[in-house]
Amino acid sequence: MSDNQFGPPQPGFGPPQAPGTPIPPQGAPGAPQQQPGYGYPQPQQPQNPWGGAVPPQGYPAGAPGYPMGYPAPPRKSRKGLWITLSIVSAVILAGAGVIGYLAYDTVANSGKNKLALPTTFQGMDSSAQADQAQEVADQIRKTASESGGAPDGTTSAIYVADDQSRILQASGYWSKIPSPQNQLDREFSAMEKDGSKLEGRKSMDPGEGGGVMDCAVGTFGGEKLGFCLLADHSVVLSVVERSADGDTPLDKVAADARELRKTAEVAK
Image (cartoon, rainbow, N blue to C red; front, top):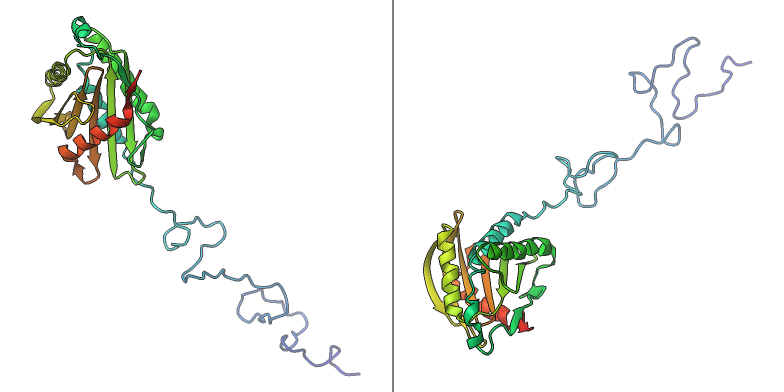
């Protein structure tokens, strides 16, 4: 009988171990290497069709060195600017309570209209900011009541472009207004008493609806912004606008105020 009870060595196994020789652990020097088709399959590294390594299982996506799956940085919030414009809008209309009720009967069309600001304007939407806009409208009414009267109604809307490159705040109130120009003068006077610095006030074309419109650049709490105030015998509308690259020219604010008024001022 042959001394080799197992026959000739099989491919892939190497020479047989001497009796009593311990089997070295996997990976240790001298350990026989597994050949394809024997033992457990080796784990395969996932392949990235765009090149570069793919994070292993359980590795957080977007970690340094693994660009695949890295989330895009969130857009910078401009909520701080909304708050600033909201405060400014309330300050601009601080004189809403000072209305000459005693003379309104002398004007036939006094108090016939109201403001109904649209949800969208020039492709900008106001839905997401509706709660904050309502706070502005409530503040205008509160300030008016504290100054000796109150308009029949108040409203506000914050329009924001999809890419947040432009923000327009529109606010206003309606009542019986015997003298639109006197009402605007009261509004400007109330702003100055509040400590706001105003410059460059000038009259602008109010548009087809008539009335008066004055625009100016004001410094409100350190923020310098252009705005327009439009008034007729029924409504007072304030428009403050800001683009991503700085203040919007007054001519642009005035044009937007005229356009917005066409939609927003409606019969009661």
